[in-house]
Image (cartoon, rainbow over all chains, first blue to last red; front, side, top):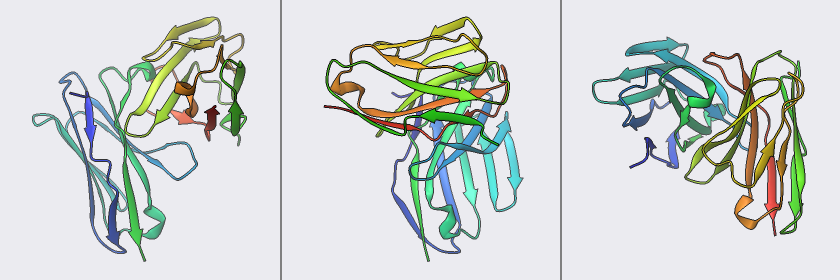
Length: 112
Length: 112
């Protein structure tokens, strides 16, 4: 079993839809959770960062962490074609860069 | 506002050849790292450095060499290229214990 699992997609949704992206993990020591967005032929960029359990909202994006279920989610409201990208989850137990574990990414297409 | 700069963007190598991927950052970050990204595998850490003169192995170090003579630069050397090293390579940097890892734009390497 991989340490971090993520449905690779591709996921296609119409413009304006609510998108739900998810990751599951096995290491209960993880307490720092991140979502990265990666456009085609580009490097990943940090989208959301959450410490421990709970929700965090930033504009149209909401990150949710459920440590009891070892499950994290990223919700995108009113999705736009510009949201079309691959979304990577990442997590760490101690916030040291060398200990970040990345999911394989979910490819999202938002159709106009 | 350069951030993390990688060169070259694209490279084709023959099996057995050696080459160096260059990486430079202008954010005065202590931590720098190299990842490779393969379909379905996510980002895998090759080598990392927590400061000038200090390097360590990540998850997949075999066939690669690094050095860190300055804070700014962190080159990755392929000693004798193999087809299994065909991948996309990302250089990244962050503060020592920071939630934001900044990635370069990537280097697409094909070994034939």
